[in-house]
Image (tube, rainbow, N blue to C red; front, side, top):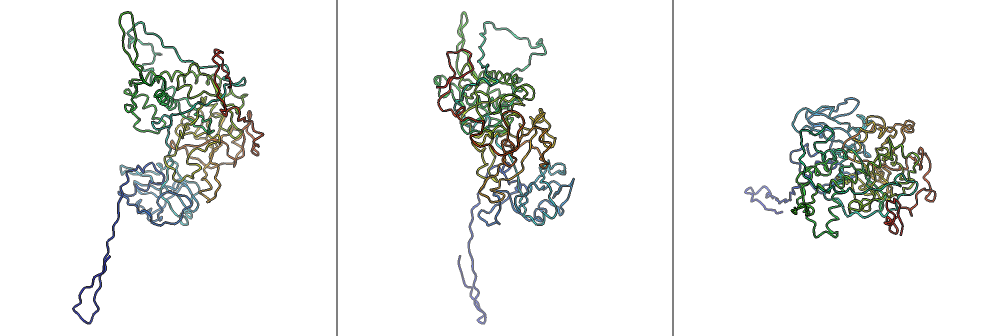
Length: 558
């Protein structure tokens, strides 16, 4: 800053003083993809938005919700002067842009921007059910308006950067009351190719698949797997293709350090990833990539009567081996579960039966079932997974299989799936497919299966909404359909193919599932009254299968 005086030739007037200053600032270009971040949809109202950091704004009851903007300015940017009501819902609609209110957060009204990239007309019908309920015109006048809303997750089952150093569950083997007590899974034996036969394509019978590999992947993509972390007492439901890729990556990770590591040929840098990672469909793209399937894992030699031919054990061979193991496990589950889980009606919900994840990835043979014990507060989703005939794989250290795209707007307690609560997280994309096949997605409340309904929760954690130090229980509740019909209406709940939900016990609803029969409404059982036994699945001491009893499904505890 400086000051200079200009000479004044008129003596009767005071000298003119001119002040000047230099203002400098830096502009940072951020290449981050805001399209998938919470609260960033407002960027599409501008061509090149410029954000000033550190500028003071009024205090909010929740962070990172978006851009606070006056109602008239928001309407002007959308090129309209009107607030309209269509089908009893409020809109601020221009020609190619439309703003819809999505939720109240204290005194804040959160809006979401929808637009047509092509510049064509956007329809009221394009709102896709993102509206908050019971918004009146008077609410618009007294609310502070925030533009920006999103709810997306990273689907990390089979993702390239997921944790694959998964430890054994060290759970005991199935006991006498388990449905899997008399079964085990063995690897198939490779048939020696003594003759090279030419297969005629034209004359294949109709029941022989033209592409059996893709047919297998299509089949397993419609099956479901619970990945249960016995250390952190939490789980994730994944589709079969994603679980298969998760097993594949973990097995390759194990090969890097096993006794044959010197012969392991796999080069991870040659592995082609999905063009759209972190989705429920990513695994299918990776597992059908021909370059991936042809990657060499080990060199082999095959000798006939006169020559020795060098061959390679390739990634496709490993995929087919893992698929064959999962196929056996799934068929056992289908057999014991029956239609709609009826085969488990008399089996205690506290016994979660499944298989050790690492037994599969480290090529153990045979593989025996295991059982974990769930607490009274952890039985709320068991009937659901049994009804869809989902298998369970146990391990320790799965990490976050389903993760928020961003933790903006989430409190620290809920930015990951809480441990030790026996929660089950499910992606909405998988859940939508499950309801379409087994239940009724358009029912109110939504029906997950023939006899199980989903009682949704639309709450925001009270630590954000009310500024409390106590966290809300945001778990969604699963109930038998005949009980759900007697409950008060929880409001409409729009189903989307993004995001995720958490199933489990919610103390605000007070429903507890017993080992058998219908759930009861009452006080939470005291710890010493719970059916769970920490000894059964604590993993203290190793739990191994006895090698002296061939075919025995039981474990010997050391």
